[in-house]
Image 1 (tube, rainbow, N blue to C red):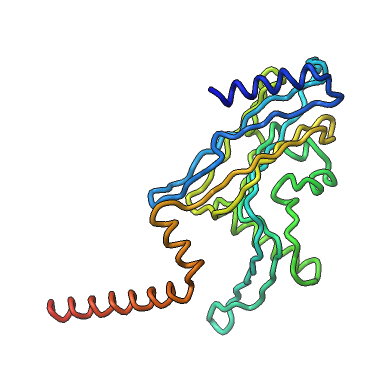
Image 2: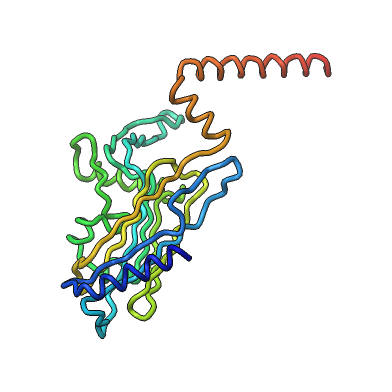
Length: 254
């Protein structure tokens, strides 16, 4: 209730100010998402309002694109080939800044909203992500590995597109739903909203979302990060203990 009142007040304030360009007033249903052992994914709602100069709603409704992006990381993509009857890693390529999660929803297909150049500048769409290959290579080879990375993360539900995922009501209110999978990485995420009119991005706004582990999962993650040597030693000792216990059980039964 407080969030809705705050949004309404912000809209009224911006409308009275007589801004020269439309303004976005965005929000998200959850600023913090906790991952526990029972975590099976989450549904994130992105919503907000479009405030027009003087409060005048245009005769045509602009398009809205929302993007949820996870922290970028470096990743090595390996290509397997069948050599002498055995599948082996034959080639690899490194990408320096691949988003760990990427989901985009729009009121219409991206190709009908903006041109290729604008889509590339704002990284609107999976095919327009700037993955920053780590080494220079032939264009065909680079495209092959990039396609492999995109396909892998799409099959893991970490990259997704929804060309009709944004609903606009009365030309003012918008909403979109983004599915967060259970295997989502932790970190600080950005929820970006773009207002596009006649192929140009006329307004943009960003909100941060924190996704982190809690409970026992948080304890294990912190222990592995802060005390890596002790954590590794404990994992080895635990594996040995479990193996020895299994041997004793089988000896007694057989």
